[in-house]
Length: 243
Image 1 (cartoon, helix red, strand yellow):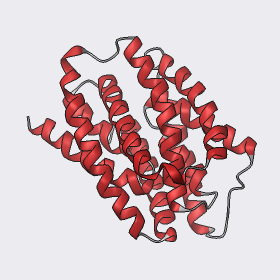
Image 2 (cartoon, rainbow, N blue to C red):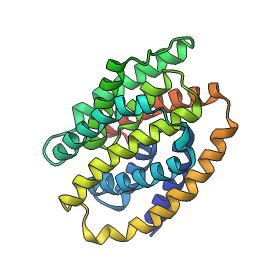
Image 3 (cartoon, rainbow, N blue to C red):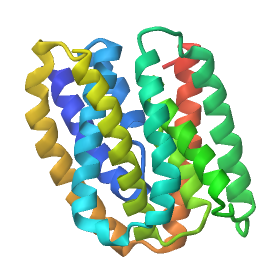
């Protein structure tokens, strides 16, 4: 029961942090979920929680959504999330995870060192970013880091960043959660987790959105980049078996 309680506490923290960082739920929560259930079951439970959190973020910030970015980024994200989810049970994710981690660490360090650098919000770049984040979300349960990396680098307003990120994640989550449900991937003995996770996602999101409105733009950007570095380091340590 202690591990279950810890899982729910971390879920609350993750929901709050994701509401002003724009990602991080899966990265923070999957290791703790894996203390309670088998890893693939943990990925599926966290996918549900991720979806609930994005629903609640959108309910508070949907007017700030950038629809151009949503469509260019979201459509390929949905398609590749389906591919990634279908491959979850079929391929080893180790090397993919390692390469992904190294990439986001280097990107975040460069962005912090070059404060004036801006990623142009070109259609092609947004499509590529959407495809990458959707695939990694479906395959290894962590797609938000790529999404955060692309969107925060376009220097859109913090509320627009969070709302658009949540909208993209929402449609991506519908795809992968649907695949998990149709395939019967979540074992019935874990269904009882769903209702507590809905309540935790709601409360944590409310707190996080309040913090977002009080933080300056530069603080949100730096927090996102710092989180990217931590995410990458953690993924490498996991791969090496250190954590």
